[in-house]
Length: 147
Image 1 (spheres, rainbow, N blue to C red):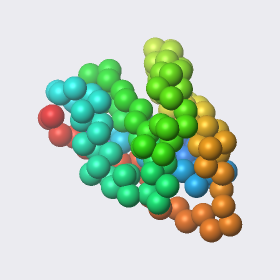
Image 2: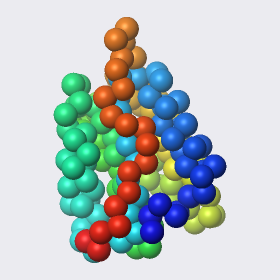
Image 3: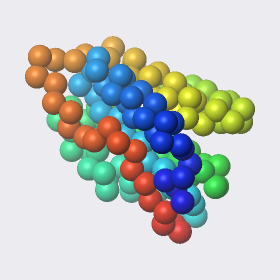
């Protein structure tokens, strides 16, 4: 099951990375883990993005890290607001970093580092304001669909 990918301590570290990344920005970061993804990973990640209502943030500055661990697939999706600022190559750099760390077996730390990298970009373009509500949960979401 996807929930078994990380230990309890690793889950806390990854969730803490999301909180740290979001502490300097109005942007929102979510992580979604699944066991399998039997369709195009970007299409499925876009579906999950919508399911998690990430497109409903006020500034359209949500970022989804989607990982299908048994299939070795991952996608990083930024909403329209952040994509208009950073360009596609930005997400490729983060994805390459994650893949490099995952190959070393550093799943939780590689993901945490990637989240922090995304948070830095979000803070540059969407700095934290006076009123900075946490619009989306920082908890990891899971799906064990056979899609």
